[in-house]
Length: 267
Image (cartoon, rainbow, N blue to C red; front, side, top):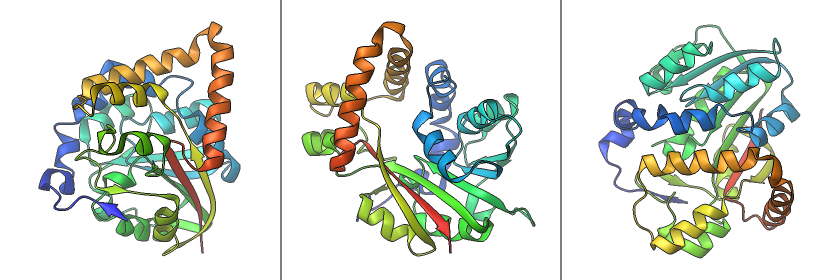
């Protein structure tokens, strides 16, 4: 297991996400990409394999885009709730009709409400103690409920090529997972039932290789996300998308995609 030590206080407490990072999550480029129809396609396919309806909690929901997409595509099938330590993005989520609960997840009370599924999309790597989050999620799931966790993959092609020059090895990421460490973490509370390798961004690999690991600002991250989202929607990009899917599938077979996800069932 690889992790950051020591951890600056602003990352351990969530202060960074409520103040400094809020402008990134609410930047036009980030919001446009998150609310694009092509965003969360992989996550939604994985999610729908195990949960076709019911109560859903998205931990670290940010601006609420995943839950918004869930409601927009499958109207009436889900009752959703998002929670996050960052207040301003939650204001935006509410403006889009997503119900939210504010504050640090570990200390939040949910009363008698229980969920059929809980998601942590690109969240666990930001947590000081991810095991505590999973322990609480276990208490919030109904019997047979599912927990979905997606994190950067430390055995990805990008990490193998770039090492510490990879832009996703940076202070906000406190933990760095492989499929094995993710499964071992989840196995404390849940029965792991599927590991899924997903996502590939060759533009990031090319840029980080050329820049030799130079810092990438949040504004640059947002603009790249906007650009790659636009590429996916261009009508003439069909052959490129096919080649991309083939490359992603091959790297998934090797366990070397950018991200790794786990689906776990409540014991």
